[in-house]
View (cartoon, rainbow, N blue to C red):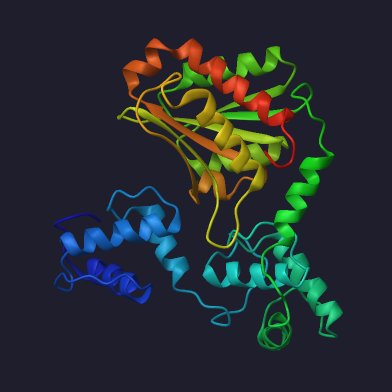
Length: 321
């Protein structure tokens, strides 16, 4: 849905936006400038590409935003349950030391295991289903936690501290969603020459790329995406509740290698986002958006070398960089 659309679906969109705290002044059922602005604000708040258009990704995020902890039973299923209620549960369990993974709002095996362990420690039936009794026990205990959502952060830092401080032997995924085959292939070649095990993914769907990267057992994921305007943006997974320490470090190194007039002109920034390819990967991941196309074509070899150096520097960097 976008500007000028009308109908019941637009009205549903507007109701969900207002329920999520984003006011608008358009007529009900009319996608006007107020609705477009509200969609854009929602996208910015959720770490999505803010274009003011409600496509599949934005709609799914709006649906997730409508769930509150206790609204439904949470359990492991396919497809996995997603929502703000899941993120709240992960954060609370993380604050109590039970959830060791990301606070990503996806109820996967880590979340099910955390619920089971919490139930076992509180004398409940250990069925890994978050229902009324488990919710009541969590409400009693979570208020005692001094901080929330810190265990996953500690776990990623600890894992990174145990990794070898070199690129050789590491498993790296380079992904592109269309139009940057040559750049992705060149980056992969540079990394392979440095001794890394590399696979290149070519697919427009970020969720598919994330699944393939997870199956490869990658140590890090580097995605490249073409933008029309000059500049470089390196995005890593992050939400107001949690962010990937390793992803943040890699993103900052990518901008250092490519941005600020080094290889691309225009604004160069790092930012936390929650797009599928970053949210669903299980390893530190960065999506590098670079442009304009003419610069990418003219400096393809230099950009490939710069991205290769960035991954190498990330592999050698200390836990805190």
